[in-house]
Amino acid sequence: MIINNAETILSVQELNASIDDTQILNGFDITVKAGEIHAIMGPNGSGKSTLAYSIAGHPKYSVTGGSVTLDGVDVLEMSVDERAKAGLFLAMQYPVEVPGVSVSNFLRTAATALRGEAPKVRTWVGEVKEAMSKLSIDPAFSERSVNEGFSGGEKKRHEILQMELLKPKIAILDETDSGLDIDALRIVANGVNKLKSKDNAVLVITHYQRLLDYIVPDFVHVLIDGKIVKSGTKELAYELEEKGYDWIKEELV
Amino acid sequence: MIRLFKNSKISWTQVETGSSITWKYPGCVLVGDNSQGEFYSVALTNNYQQTDTGSKMSHVGKNTRSRIVSKGISAGNSKNTYRGLVTVNRKAIGARNYSQCDSMLIGDLCGANTFPYIEVGNKSATVEHEASTSKIGEEQLFYFLSRGIDSEEAVSMIINGFVRDVFMHLPMEFAVEATKLLGLKLEGSVG
Image (cartoon, rainbow over all chains, first blue to last red; front, side, top):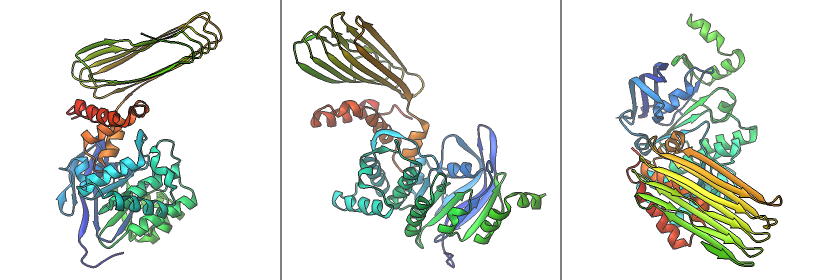
């Protein structure tokens, strides 16, 4: 939802980022205000994942210029865990397996880190149960090792479960729709929608318009060659679905 | 060396964070028929420590069974070596052994080796050995950090996950202590 005079949550200005000395982002700009949902769409190799990872601070990606602020505070100066504590959350496209670390242990440790104190056992158990049932996750899930042997849908649901419990100010969803069947997609999208409030914001990175039927964006941006070349409303997403990205590239020339 | 007689069983669990140089090869001689030996081990080395340890299982009696699960963690400039010996005598009909050796490296200055010695004297024996070496992944670490967990806690959780197969054989109080001990020993090993 677009709110008048809403506060800016995430502001990215002239961001340049590279991986292995190859520059991927070329002066990327975006301003996300409280309550808004932004979608970033773009063809393969346009820099979508680089954007997500550079904001989150992955060591493989180096930011070579520009600025990123969260609630007005410089994010690029922060370590990765400080960024999370500041309210940034990245739902990953390919979350990694961690053998021997149970989901319940992982969730509780993360919640403890972000809230500054360990959640009370009594309320915590209920909180996790409720969040899991919203996402149709089997309770036995919490005793499994983090992402180990999870199906594609389970991995994504686990990401959204964390988002639900950690309650970020800004959530970046990196191709959360990839590898999901239509039912799982609906469950995941519902989870995101329920979490959405006038105080937080979501940045959805996706290839396809399909996810945007369920998570309806206020703004759609087209990312090509590391910068936003066109912005619009959700109609732009339908146009892209129909015509592909080539017409925009042609417009640019 | 421990000798096991008919139908007896021993399960051995150890955690060592040890001295500067450690050589240790505890063993079981499975003399009696149907006797069983199990050995679960976690060895952690840091700084310039060196360990060369492993378990010996000698199968003498019929249908004897043994199992070795060894987890090595190396940090700093340390070297962590597993050197195990499994022997199956000519008359140890139906003997079975399963060995699993996993090594984890923290940083890029340490090393891990696995030397499984296996001597089998009869055709009916089944001897299995599995080994793996992995490095604490940048991706795993990033995943934890991106959820607000700091790097020391993250490493400690990943390591404790890695050794869980062994720690679950420890009595609860000892397991809690061992978990803390690993954390202490690894303090400052990740930048």
